[in-house]
Length: 251
Image 1 (cartoon, one colour):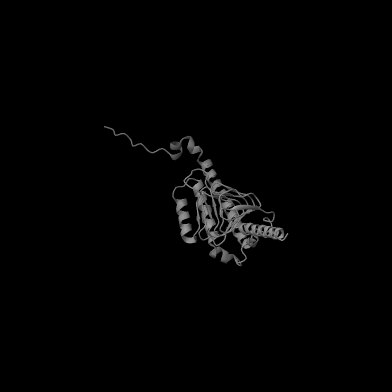
Image 2: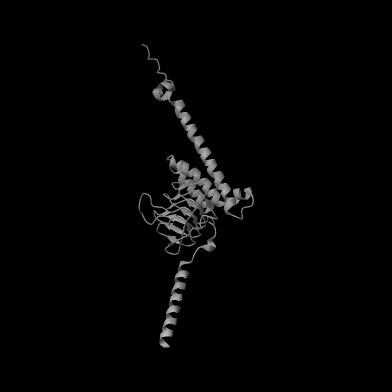
């Protein structure tokens, strides 16, 4: 009685069939994607690093910035987590975000979209939500929140244009637009859209349009005090009315 000869496994190319012929193309596409990511990531990180010297007068040496700036560390780790998140990798992007928050005090969801040249100054307490969009060359100070307003789904976090400055402790909540070169005063709570080249201050934030925000984006001392202006106007009005009453009573 003859035993049937054992069946040898087919070569990989035959088991894959037509897909085996496409293996080099698939490998080439993967390498091209990886190279594109590395190139884009390097260019973005280089701009993130360079902008620190333009924005922070305390930055004196490249090694100091590389080792001692948590905002730069958070942005660098975010870019890795965002790339993994965009390729639908589970768990790891959120875990990277969690570790980043533990070491830097800055929480950036991997799903957020952050442009190049973004500087998070000091950074402790900064929170950037999942659907937030931050344009190129924005400046974000400590304690800033780009958050939602409830349990809504879809686009629920703010969109910042380019060259936006957000002061310390400011909260921008909801799916609202902040235009290019806008400024958000420290401690403000912004619930409505801010046009380009305007400043929002107060609780809730009020828009005061300016034309000089492009030339002096860091001059927080020039941010107007809306309440003080209103009170001054009321006092001037009261003084004018008192003078009119005094003039009438003297007749």
